[in-house]
Length: 385
Image (cartoon, rainbow, N blue to C red; front, side, top):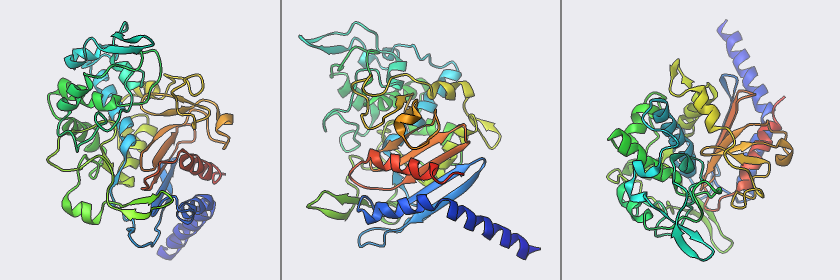
């Protein structure tokens, strides 16, 4: 009997491997084309992991990826922060139409940039504007960008941001930027605890995301922290972390837009909760209504929104990520309504509620590639029967 069961399991594994050969080929191509080094991908469909493969490069300076390998996920932090804020909204602790200054008085009475100079903004800056990247804040130069090299707490960051004029009237246009990092400080003010503590108690612990955090230990940095692949033409190879984050445990600048490290299996649990309508292992973390709000259109794509990402053809913008509005624009047979986002050193994910599917790709390279995300989606959808 055991032999028969083992045969059935092995047979299913072989069939799944054959089915997802386009994904395997894509992972190998990322290395062969010198886009990135070792990488790991996962596909989950209808309640089970149907593909999970690590493609190690074996190149000098690279590391093999294991189950506990940590990756900085950068902007894949943003959907986590979006869920955190929507949790507080459900609990009646915040209204998305609240002025930001209710929680961060430093940001009261902001200035706006205009054709004739800086002036007092007419529109009120609201929480929903931060969630939807319609606040007027963007990603500034090295002085004000979220950085734990410069800041060791969020209050100092907000104080510096308060000196900046907005690029446009709040609510008037999409402008990708530092919004979720400001929202992390809003959560701290509301809850009276650190942003990391709130995430740990309300998201990471219930989802058993034991390796998702804002820091790494010395041992993790030496053994589990994946190196960065650099290919800039004249410089090619692997190096230590080149980010603007120290990831030190004694640093309390918990940036909700960029700061988390995680494993692929940890982030899969977050995706599993979302695809489950807010429920994980029988425990509800967030309502389906909040997920619907998160994944509905809050901004048009390019060119209707001039500042939207030009590479995301067919996509609108939700809260903390993209939403596919026109599958023909994407051109890879993806499902209308898929949503997800990516991180700055090439971590990518998306969720397909119609097919009950999500997919995650973790790699680490210095040059971010929108095309990598599209090729990954094409490989996954090209594998489905």
